[in-house]
Image (tube, rainbow, N blue to C red):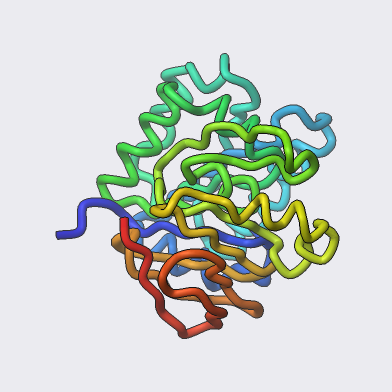
Length: 237
């Protein structure tokens, strides 16, 4: 039986017109017009950049006719605030946008805000992560720029999925040797590459669909291959 809301991993394009229809579907699946946006992965960027995330989030919410709840959670102190955690309640869609996935996971894990996110998702809210947000939801987060260095612990909500966002762009500049290191994972972990302007989504965290202009690439596991919009695949939990 389903015991949580819809979940989505997005390669790029959060809050932009290219993903507008998909975000509308996520809101509808979550059963509420309340669109909660967390810019936490960008929390160490400058004030102008943080305003950018708030602005494009508002533009998307307006296009969707949704209520924007932009949560200014930029550091762990913010994530410990109960008043901000309460604003997650009743969300139709909770969205973790891009930036630094390591910082995102370190900031949210074990906080009232993360507890509110997981509690609302299990109650039926949709949950999406784009780029850094998608990477942080997995069991671990490799370091793209220092592939031989140890990565960091992810939020672990999807313990069987390691995500490579921007897949059609990133693997164009990662050296072959570094790419092979990225693909070394425990047997139970599936490495998924998600192209830009593309997403994979699921209602049970096992059977996944694909939407968008690109493809989802399963690089490890029993069902490797390239899956485009309308395709389905299964990742065992």
